Length: 449
Image (cartoon, rainbow, N blue to C red; front, side, top):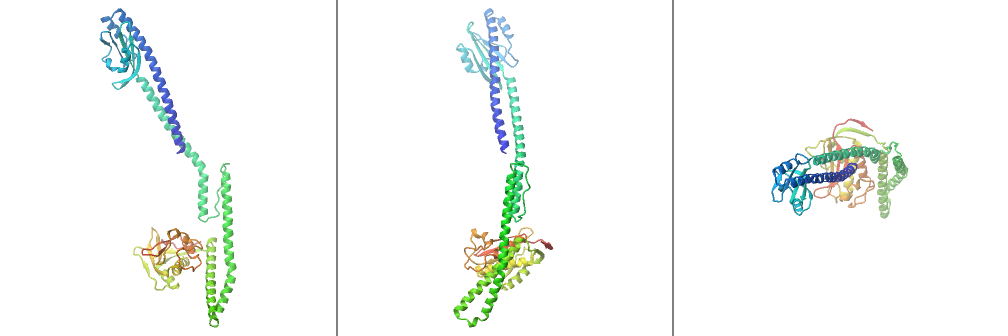
């Protein structure tokens, strides 16, 4: 567009300037020729008026003074006001300004239009015989030349714009093609494929950009892998001391009745924190396996309402209502273990932050998708936190309790993403939240790794 616009402005400007100069030159040239021709014809008329004033011989001689072209015309205004003309067009055809100039005893030249045609009018005062000579020179040929010139400029401008736009498209694609590859590579890296790199460029100007991008990708991959290894190593190293702490607290819990009241309270705090710490380490290990791609996906065709009922009972919600919308499919292609982690974490989240879930709803989604919704009547989630709470260690600002590890919803998002769906939270009519999990509903048996 830039190349085309630049060519358009340049070609139109050049065409206008050139056309204006050429038109002025052609008209000046035509005017000079008309002036000289009118003077020559006026001298012939003066010679005839000297020898034969007002006679029939003069009329015959004047009729021999033809205009330069057939479409032109001329006339003589005699001293007594009589008009002698070679055509039916008379004095009124000439502009009044030109006639006023000649009436003052001077000669003049002026362009005018008559009957849809353009002329150069010339008037010469013949002082010796007190007569005026008028002649109209047609501009037909000049107009045709100018029209041809205008068409040539218009066609040339259009061709220039097309050629410049084509060059601009070719150049832009050539220059932007590497940037497009870099954009695609950046998108693949953002999607999780850290091994993506951009092929080397032969262009010396673009080669540093490609090298810088690949170097940045290498640094990002190394850092992320280092952080993933660190989290995985720390989680593994913490398993042994946590197991020992859990065993010790179990021993103390077995002798709870022998402990004083204040010691019992401290023991309860330790037991709760050890269990919370143990759950966080397990979640971190699970996230490490997901990040490393070590978790296989075993999908199968299952009935969502039946599986949801079993999971709800396992998590202590045996009486929780499970509603299926009439237009929704009851089945989906999912991994049972991952779906249990998804739904179980949502139920635990409702228990910890909203006094428990109200119901599970299976609703129709877009084509080939079904939505599984966990509703609660809690304080809800603020708009600016609805996407952030699915991040690791994130907590909603309206949470009334600070239980949990902050990893439950992050695990939900990771497992749903692995199943090819998405998860989000929205406001529930009447208050509370709706945690929605969208899953694929088409049948696809087999194992995906």
